[in-house]
Image 1 (cartoon, rainbow, N blue to C red):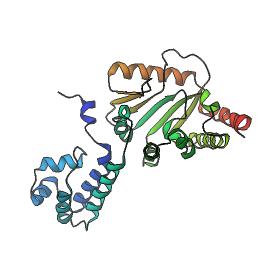
Image 2 (image 1 turned 180 degrees about the vertical axis):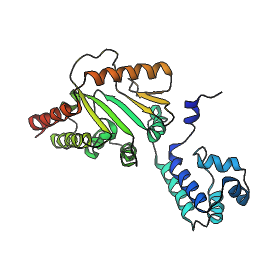
Image 3 (image 1 turned 90 degrees about the horizontal axis):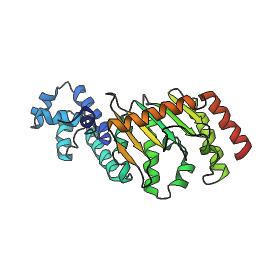
Image 4 (image 1 turned 45 degrees about the horizontal axis):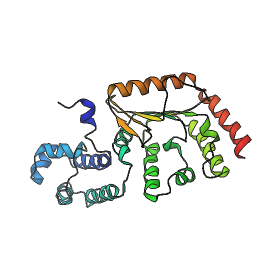
Length: 268
């Protein structure tokens, strides 16, 4: 039998927006799942799967539902937009499953040892790191999570060396670090800097996504690219590492002061 976390990962985040619109339209029409299923000649369970983002329905089915709900083509339009998103999304193989968790997460915790945390990168910083246009656009799409309402709680610790490592040029670095200060002042975002030191149990960059059902997924950097895991032992190690880092890192206020100091002394 699949575990709760494995079942959760059956949900495709790219389908979530369409699923919500589908359900909203059905409820606005005053129909329950069984009534809609009867009108479009499918099993009620299929309607449930679509509304839970467990399956991508066909366009001809969406057209039938659109007519049954008097949606005036809006549901079909949402389906077309979904297909376009699915066509353009591209992630590294090792990372392929993590955006599903990231998209749904109520909380994200991360540590970066070399670079600015991906969701916090400016366009100039990210474009220098990702010269391939599809890779760059994938990074920018991921950052849309910051505009979600409500956004996830995000707590990130970055190694102090990240502030000094020149990416692209001084102008890009100045803009990037100023953006970090701006982000750190937003509600729900915590940015801390870990001074250069040895931290027991901390070996690489990682991000832990906590889903609404409290299950977790972690992605860690590896020499060959990275690794996504839901194994309890991996989650235990990375969670313990994050607790250590938070305890040893500068406070959010002290981190902002250090970032400002580095901007003034190195990147201005």
